[in-house]
Length: 411
Image 1 (tube, rainbow, N blue to C red):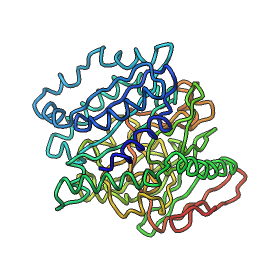
Image 2: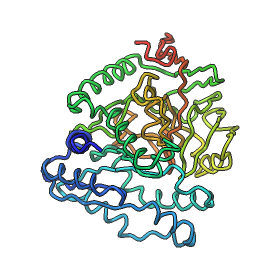
Image 3: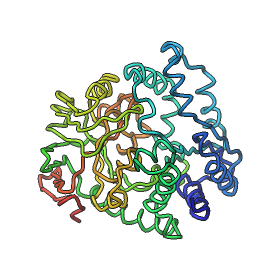
């Protein structure tokens, strides 16, 4: 990989994406296969004034062995220290921020018991929810990024020698994350400003509902939650620090009303869920709930996703992404949600973000649900945007506005 770009990428992610503030604790989650990148981010963190940089190493191969060989009840029995090891930093008077570095093989758990996978992952998400609420509510700065892994690169570029595939994937990541501009900070400032302008226009329209239509059969009407607010590009943490939650990001997103989603929608990209791919999928909604669904591959896995808990079959997010996004223009299917969700409009099964409700970070879960925000242990983004997607909105005053035409912003 290009070492100059690698350091530019790390510096931008830490100093702008996470925006590490002086004296904050900085928690990094990173695959064991990518120590060089973790070290570059740790260096950038200390340069930004971090009090302590803590790296949590993750091992996908070990995780597969554990999932395959371990007993389900043991894998679900998490220990208090696993939660406290995060909360101790979050509750520190100097606070914390966090970076999650992903380098996943999209089929890392292929062939394993999908029911067991789902139940174990649900138990872990539920156990760690007090920590996850720090990010879901933007109580701290947080950022999710990705770096290549051999299994992932081989999936994106099949038939190519792994070292070449890794190099090509690095180059693609540098391009779509605007690192190859040579000045990612300036490039992202321009991108964030442009995205904020569209976000502000959507909020100014005071929309009641939106309708998505495509020639593939998608015809979905989504009512919006009460007091909803559109977000995009950057966010503000409780301490006032601006951060970018996903790098890359091309979306402007909002909270649907959990009971006001109707129609059918077809997936336009495969979805990697629990290390396995769901392909050729569709779902039908009535009064917010999925009432019918199917898939060409792993329909049983889709069923398990939608029955993870009582609200997993409702959606917590609707996001608009133009077909001209750098990720989509690359022509590459990344088999990675972080990238593929930024190539197409998408919805998310499961929980909504409290920050998509005005003042939502200070509301209780019950109060948020009264406003229509969905609550669930999962938040799974699935891609539904097509090159011909048309999106119209209906304002609360009854006026209709065109938001997307032929897969692109109409304003």
